[in-house]
Length: 238
Image (cartoon, rainbow, N blue to C red; front, side, top):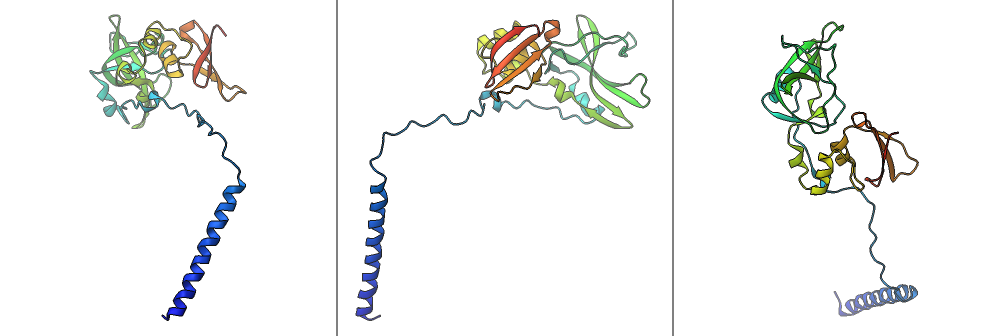
């Protein structure tokens, strides 16, 4: 390349760099002096806390044989006052004509046997039952259904197979005290409340940050208002 051609190219590049520099100066000068730096916002509240990282182990049973993995092991109710239990007769069969109430929130049982029994009045339909003892008597807790060799096992929806005290050991002693006393305190979240008073029925609110849940609480109804996931108001009755 000839020396004259090189000088022309260098001059063109120099002019381009100068033009770019002048443009940047004009842009920043037009913005005026920088104001005081604004503090960073909190960002959206995603409700992510230590509870979000708790992943309870699941039984993943799919038939009678796999559900029998519960035998000889402790389990804890996930939702108190939800699942009806039935007394077991001296012949080892559940008496479906006699309801024996429900189990309380995170109540511990030890499964002695898992077996199936025909559902009264439903030909070919069977109940899968977890047999346990309470106060010296045997009871049956339905944990699934079966028909024609096909099963639906909902043990994972009904039971923890790990101690919830260990799963949620990051909760404060004050929270666990309220849970043991079956009380909901302001500031508790919905998981903590369910451990204290069992299952609840949510109701829609026009405020997206607010939620109302009614808890039967074994006959002592509570209405709890949550705001951004925390209990702010607890009312007895409806």
